[in-house]
Image (cartoon, rainbow, N blue to C red):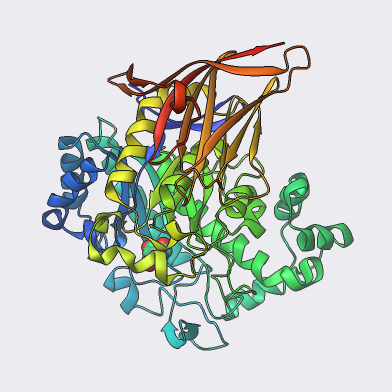
Length: 531
Ligand code: DGJ
């Protein structure tokens, strides 16, 4: 079997594991869970019980290289064994120099040597800054993206990890790697160290201007306008008000590229970078320099070793965020999303409409416990729909995962085509999917139906045959064929794929022909258009 890889199929990047399309029906563990094998032991069973096919969790620089030059891989080896014993794959989050615009996962020998591994300066001469969040001022400090020693040391440790994976992970249990975690600077829009200041006063590299111009279609308005006016000069001359963010993005992307390229030279697993999204206005209110949608093209220009750029979605604007991360050929991969009652519907939508590569509610190890209210409630969630205020039920997530997992062979063929689509209640502006001769509308507000976060996915596998996966909605077909304006169902089977075989649990007709999805359900329908 070939190693996990990314391939472009039907014009879209897909993830292949053991040579087959793989959709990561997943979850991200809390930051500290994978720090010991003992703590992880019960988690695998729990993950199996919710039918995820993979999980993502940190493997840290701190634990990998506690003493400079001495690498420890016992933990990652044990994690691979545990995952294999549970038939599970996993993605590694390399917590290197950055973790949420901070450097808490750098080894102590890095943290202690602030001369060799110098810190970014939010204000001139100051290695510590303050960031206001949830009403209090939090001190933070981060390593500088401009420090070559840090970049070299981080890349060396990451390359050692990748080399080791190549040697030990012959069954391909590790399928993707995230390089760093939520990079950028908080509390300021750029590094004010002497080194950064000198580079900021110099000319914008030609490679960047050319890369952005080549990707002009996707650029955000202010950056596009700036480039229309001026394509050479200092950062401020070329990018005006966006200069600090573009400058930080360019140098942070270069840093990550150096780390990713060193890893890929050893073992070229699919790799990506994630980000804390634009929130609260100006860069610095969110980490300045991370791969937010405003600067995706900067990353695409500078960091070719990254296969995609990924959003961590805790903001209410789920639909809009998905859209922003599917420009310029970037596939949607969601390594973190708030875990709440709306997440299963979001998974259905992300698979159907955006052909997502990974969907991972954060803190998945807490699912079904009292502790799992943390994110749904805390991080500025939209609570307009009752499901968004509720917990994600383990049974619901397990059901959706099982139904989608069975469908993966079908979905794999349809990714990148217009024969797979979805609508979601959260997007009131788009309720109808157009399949050429037939349209399918998702009806989410109807007194006959269970209300809550709903979604409807439609996968067309033959001219008259669709799989419909829905929750809390009613599907409504309309013929768009003027020659055959009437529609009827021939058969409606409710069921699921078990060991690759479509298995029917009920044949729906009569009253049940007026399909109403409550809990996540999969149907196979045969339709007839006629005059
Ligand atoms: C985003 C980070 O990337 C995660 O590691 C975690 O800290 C979550 N936020 C929730 O706190």
